[in-house]
Image (cartoon, rainbow, N blue to C red; front, top):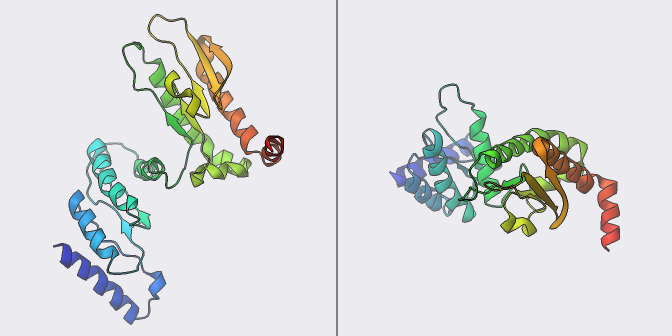
Amino acid sequence: MHEAMILSALESARRAEDIGLAHDKIILSVKMSGVQDLIAVYRKLAVRCDYPLHLGLTEAGMGSKGIVASTAALAVLLQEGIGDTIRISLTPEPGGDRRQEVIVAQEILQAMGLRSFTPQVTACPGCGRTSSDYFQRLAQDIQHYLRQQMPVWRERYPGSRSVESGGDGLRGQWSWREQAGAHIGISLPGTGEIPVAPVYVDGEKTVTLKGESIAAEFQQIVADYVVRRYTPHLSNSSQEIRE
């Protein structure tokens, strides 16, 4: 089966060139529905041609099953340098949003450090010291806020395009353990603790948020950070000071 797929793709490409399509206008796709089949076929195809390759696990399924299967297959190939474009094929849940496929594709590339599309939010999974869902709701809200704001930030602050390159992204961290490694971090109270949340910016504690408006105030801190970091004249000034 693998060889049949490869021969079909290569012969179709050669035929296309015979009737006039330029070599550099062709991209090959040999989508499979099995993870190991997909990996095996593309590995073989990559050494037998120089056409760009389009990756995608077809009929991957619904929900977490489709996401996990697609990630398992594509991550292996992308790590080996195989693949030029990708597609995630998910069966949408009733009333689901087709854009989920695009979001998953972006998150795969971002998780592997190949491209960045939105600031990366790192959220604590929860433990014995947490009994409320506040940190979950805050993580969800800030992720939604960042995804909404990125189109605006890209246009308004040209420097924020570096977020897309994966070289200088903005990361958020909710747990105190990794605050030093995050650009912006917030540590939330645990069970029975006073509702205060210290905020760290580039490893330095800057403010402690309190009360019912922690989420809104934290979003504003993130927005101010983006303006300060990515507005060209402010970024240049900061660079001159560091030098």
